[in-house]
Image (cartoon, rainbow over all chains, first blue to last red; front, side, top):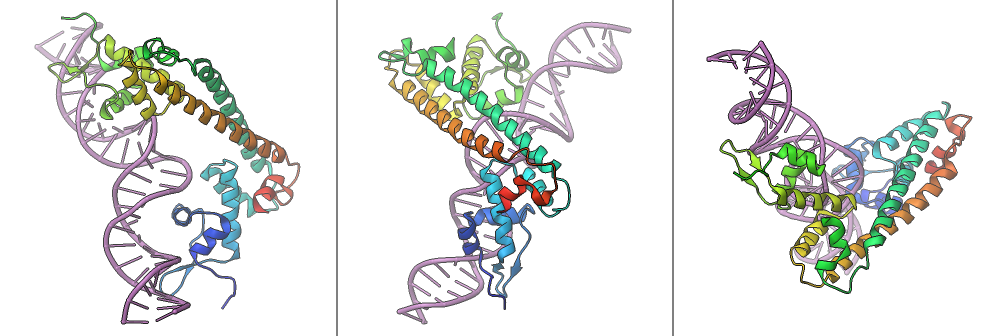
Amino acid sequence: MTTGTFNIGRLGERAGVNIETIRYYEKIGLLPEPGRTAAGYRQYGEDHLRRLSFIRKGRDLGFSIEAIRALLRLAEHPEQPCEDADRLASAHLAEVERKIEELGRLRDALSEMAHCCAGTVAECRIIDALAS
Amino acid sequence: MTTGTFNIGRLGERAGVNIETIRYYEKIGLLPEPGRTAAGYRQYGEDHLRRLSFIRKGRDLGFSIEAIRALLRLAEHPEQPCEDADRLASAHLAEVERKIEELGRLRDALSEMAHCCAGTVAECRIIDALAS
DNA sequence: ATTGAAGTCTGGAGCGGCTACAGGGTCAAG
DNA sequence: CTTGACCCTGTAGCCGCTCCAGACTTCAAT
């Protein structure tokens, strides 16, 4: 009887991940299937918690599930060169920067047309920008 | 026989919208059902084109479908005050700014850990950031 | 008149990444 | 013995499309 086993609720609590999300991660093969109690309850250990925290941090950094899958595989092979990890992170960083620029253009366009109005829709800069 | 009617392909071409997307907009009630030819082909006119272009510009500005629905309703009532349009645009602008900040934080976190590597996964800053 | 390519039709499934049920079983405290 | 908190499975929904299969139509070239 290992001391360090716990149910899904506790795992979610400790990793900061929704229970449903944990089951989802298991379903898509991101988190390995844990053992079960006689009643069918999932039983987790510290290794599951580490892996789930890894996933959660990756998601917080905006990595896709597939990128995280790749990063997890890399983490399991510490002796390999980390070029792949670097490539994944760099690609993601580039994508984030692209999105920032895109949103910046959006913000400029929106702030030019917002606060148009003391008037009616007929003279509204917002509606006009869309209709013209 | 009106001169200005055209098929869905031409409409999509002129508005810069995918054919499937047009049918989707019709299905969700964003674009009114057009007339049909005897063979069942949709037939559009300039009013459809204007409405679809409106939608497309709204989407380009990142408005949600529901926001666009509201903006379209407003555009149909030019005599009303445009407070609602202003509210929608301001809320959207605020949301865009929130996302920019969020992505900025993401970029900072990522750029701190990227380009970690001349080494192996064991010493990789990226993997380490996720695993620790 | 025939053929073939390009256009159009419907209905339904799939994407990512969850989230929210419904309808049941289990467990521990009082 | 009951209550309430937890857990189980399976399925459907969210957004905004996008793609597919399989059938039909239109039009130009032969």
